[in-house]
Image 1: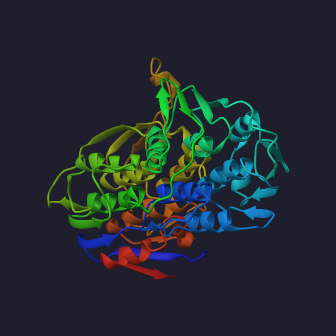
Image 2: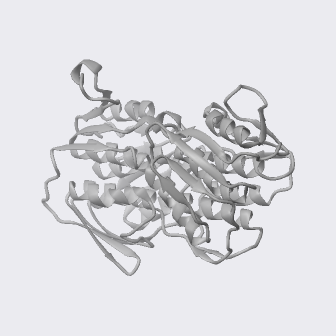
Length: 419
């Protein structure tokens, strides 16, 4: 995992076909639902990510202490799963995981009748999870502005609780498409729900086991949109994607238009075409509240093209695998691009935080990028290799969600070698 890779494009006209791994987000939801079913069913096009492998292994484990490593989704989903059934476990993770808040989910589960306590620091992993005290009331309130994974975890175990769940979402709801994805997958497995204003009601029901095909990962697809944007010309086909997707990150296809990329969908594939001489938009404004995982991709696209960007909806980026805003600010500065927070005095009547990107990436010094144990840092920065040689530390971190990433870049004509 500690390898440093040297990466450079050997040709600025990029053409090829890529078969993407299954979506980690979808796969982890289906794995949890299969465990809640208690009946095995086939999952096709399974995600090859470390996170999904960890999820699968921990759901099948009979060990007392379970280690989710860096996998945030896995940790949150398992917290709800373990708390809703009999038995005792300690659920832990990596050093970074122990810095990522879990309190709102623990509070909600304990309010419902779970028995969860903290091993060390209150509000953070590791957790000691005991036998439920009894799920007497289905009603619980959770803030919607922290992480949609808390809400998804509660909803998926909800129908298996004696009285179901009545989930009241307070405040602004971030990453809404992920919640809609959760409910759509639950519906596929026979679960009915009602969503009225800020309340989601899931009566007690049984999941109906049946085979599931996992759509390819739109988050992974975003890196090829970035490659197309930074290439002189591009003709890239991505296999396994659909226009009507459960994944909010499919919004990258719309963003791609601003960079001259045309997306054509046919037979579970999308073809990206970027013609020579197309000028990208000089300014891009976007709210990532529904798609935080593609923010880093778009930061790099703007940096590579010298586009001024104005972005909001980034509040969940502080609590990901790293503080992604701070990390990207540091790395872009290495190529003379600046990611800065807009001072309050310049947006007196506009709520929320705004960030700007300014400058065009200068790769004349062959920069070495750090990845901060964050798979998306490595993959978002990689397309900048179209502008010159880069080095990427801890390049193996991509295995968290996309183990074959560097090999797929090689298939498109990139030089990728260990140094």
